Length: 304
Image 1: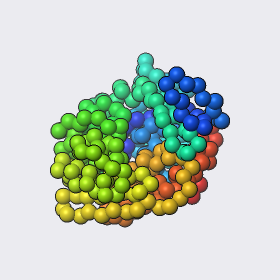
Image 2: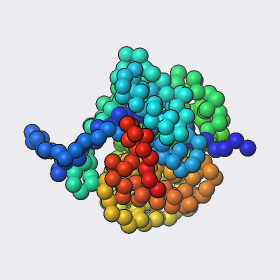
Image 3: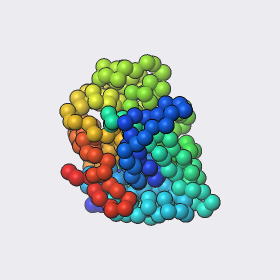
């Protein structure tokens, strides 16, 4: 039998990571400690996470014809992701971001979407052989919704499952909601989608998940250092506490969780087992310094 495949349809960003004592307030200049580049974007991060979990990973996306784009493509190949369907978009720069990390490990970021906004139906049509093999499709909100809908329709037509990481938070159409099998959000995104205040606790996450399954068959709500909650329309509901670790950097933790979860789902694992593995993967990542994670220049891998 063919090994399960997770296809990520989404964003690729070249990240500039800045370490500083704090993030600047409006009009303030802060002297930083160091900076380094990193290949990212929610889509790219999740595709690498899937491959790191040992499951076949394919990426459908777009980069510019520039140095950032070449670095992003090289990184996907180096990390074992099938990048044949990452298009080089003429006339558009690659997506990029600048993220500033404070001494507590938290961060703020600005993204410029660039080539990611050119994704559409044509990219789905050109990846039909991958789409047909896809066990799980991963989507995020960093590309046009019409593109996400086209990808979800194609995968569902071949019997695959659709997991939507609805981040960053934005209003979603009924069409995309109807195509989604599992939605994954953090407390802030859950509050936006559920329309209720969400406290960043397991109890708050559970309340949000119960609201979300009115629209989605299943919902996963992460509550940062508290843990994660799962709820579905079949009546299954559970919470898993976060694994205690010394947090070095929270950057990319959500993407690591989502990619690892999708890998477990593609393997046929039940929700609780897949979430437990994702919880462990995210805990490892937040305890690992950025400089010891993947680097565009060196191709280093997150050490397990």
